[in-house]
Amino acid sequence: MLAEKSGQSWRPLLLSTAVTLALLSLIALSDRSSAPANAQTLQATGPLKWYRGNLHTHSLWSDGDDYLESIALWYRDHNYDFLGFTDHNVLADKERWIDVEKSKGKQQAFEKLKQQFPNGWVEERKTEDKLETRLKTFREVADRFNEPGKYLLIQGEEVSDAFQKFPVHMNANNVKELVVPRHGGSVAETIQNNTDALIAQRERTGQPMMIHLNHPNFGYGVTAEDLMRIRGENFFEVYNGHPGVNNSGSKEHASTERIWDIINSFRLGELQLPPLFGLGTDDGHAYHNIPSRASEPGRGWVMVLTDSLTPEKLIAAMEAGRFYSSSGVTLNCVTSSTEGLEVSIKADADVTYSIEFIGTRRGFDSKSEPVLDKEGQEVRATRRYSDDIGKVFCRIDGHAAKYCFQGDELYVRARIMSSRKHPNPSEVGELERAWTQPIIGPAAR
Ligand SMILES: [Zn+2]
Ligand SMILES: [Zn+2]
Image 1 (cartoon, rainbow, N blue to C red):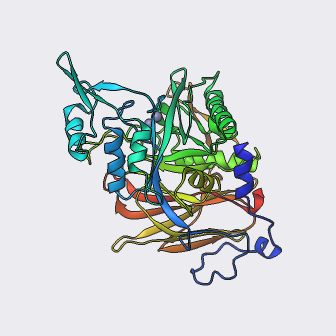
Image 2: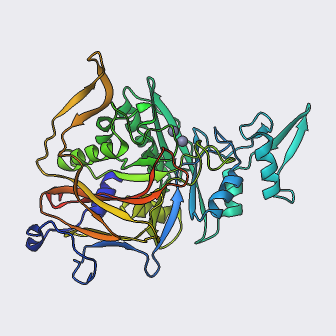
């Protein structure tokens, strides 16, 4: 099972007596030589590099407004190392011709395509006064763009399912075959059934693949309670750049970060499941008027630390928590150990940063109440929990900080907030951020 693999590889080893006595403190970063042997230090060194990627992308194969190869070019030109194409319930693996004028990108996308790819790359035909072009397959585009160590395109799919009126979208990356939505008798069962389908394909083909839960607050389809018990699926989108996905929640609905903390408190405190990791993604559909208020590329991404740019290595690294997510902030180093969590930022001039360490302690108040509307009717929403969950243990302004475990933490994660406004935000006033993955605390080992 993926869940067990991921959990085992992530869990640090035994806790020393000295560490259990450690007090909460913030200390300047200096000497790392005393770090225990089981520390996981995420830092580009030797063959290890940070690779920047987006794992949520739409094209003309579904409801995006541009061609695969134009999108691949955009990401390559904007300093990305890898990109997963994830159109809705389709793989770009067959012959398909589209009517240029009726397509989402219309003539504008087609002219841009011909300009970017001259010399016979673009195929067109005229039938009954209509101009058609053949959509390139994933393989054709990957063969043109993939360059070892430099740029990698990954075949994926947004498995776009629903339970009743609630959307349940999951991205399957590095798939070999289409995952047909499996449905289910509840939102949770729908998530589990699609997860199981991906795991079955992975086990049958032997090809590493990953699945993640997309935008839980899109149509407020997925609650913390739906997601917390899922097995074999350990990723969700804490940040999705589509303006319609409600990352920040609403009066009735928890934000994605609150959902994340609720889930990890229960997974690590009660359910004996591995932590859920948080991804940043674009969910881009609109590629022609950047910046505007549409779902555009370049808003959120992951930074994965590994020694080579292959789907296998990227997936293994992500399953082991060797990545962070960003909407603009770059990190130098993230160190997790039995002592705590340490973060240092690759700081930009004239920008200030605030580092928050967030987590939940053993014995937290796990009671919850339903959300009620004005008439007192229960709303289908993440329930309301105590402030014990997702507590900000400390916040410091600066470029580096360390949180030392007190001994009763189930997990801790860091959120880094920049003073700089996101240049193309998905929500008004959004600041650039980064999110480390939660690390398991002494109380959950
Ligand atoms: Zn979606
Ligand atoms: Zn999408």
